[in-house]
Image (tube, rainbow, N blue to C red):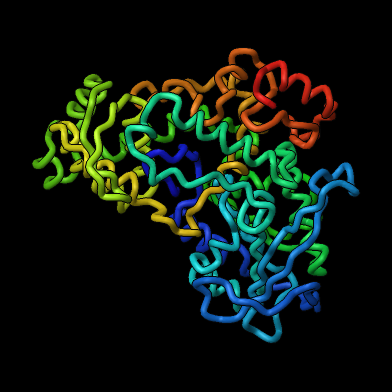
Length: 440
């Protein structure tokens, strides 16, 4: 995932390793042959995408922000088609569904192209920036990674920054943030399919991309030839609830791997004890070198702040391998290594960027209302002190068992537990959100 110190935690993004595994599975699953059919794209123009050495095709499609009101504000949904290499190509393209939620699929093109080269020989590859990401009505929050660590690690800092971002996003021409759900976004995807003249296509998704694939297949089952989903995040999964469990499992794996490795075990024999001691020592004043600016800083580190530094390192094995050394250093009062690791992921990469406004639009519409009813308990040791930093209203929502979210109140475009559309009054929902204090 792309998260540096001070960035908001973003669960279940699409790490590059998952992309590679999914791409290999897709090559195997989609290797069947179908009869050829000519399906020329529409409104496509030759273009270049950063990191892709060859020319591709770019297009965009105008879509209503509110599908129930075709005359409402319209947004441009941008997409890229990488044409098949073979002249006698197959008629069923491959649609890549990005993770996050909040990643730009087009920004991932250069990353996944080498892994999908076999598929691309006889099939077009399609990358669509889901609404709220990339160039499709982007919902981007300011990059706060250059702020001082003391400011970013203060309790409630992430919430305040997200509230500021929400208020700014609502001023955009397309700033009605109720209409950035998975359900509506998949209708955009199908509109692109129709514009391309494609009868059926294949879906490839990992992490949140699997939820998107399942939702597309729910709405348009006759338009899917095959799906390849890896690291499944089904619609009934409550992302914020599973966050601490997933992080705890990943951290336990790091501890186990270190204990099983003779060199690591000899260097850090008391790693888990040091971790527990570190947690118990907080809050306290610590010294850091800000990993992006290089400035020495002091900050009050809380348990929440420490977990925010550890979590991003668990998303990439190459980074997690350095975590034992960083935790050992931190237990001795030296936090530079841990801060540096936490800031290593993403590094400004467009492919790893998360559009936070879109991310929280999805999580707060589709997951937050179900937190209170969830039966899954947070992990005991890596438990986050409540899901508050995910959505400023999440604590209130869970306590009241309401439906309002951080950015908006979800409308009838969110499928229910039985994967059927819930028909709710939009005006009643907005009033309820205002009463909850979550919508302005």
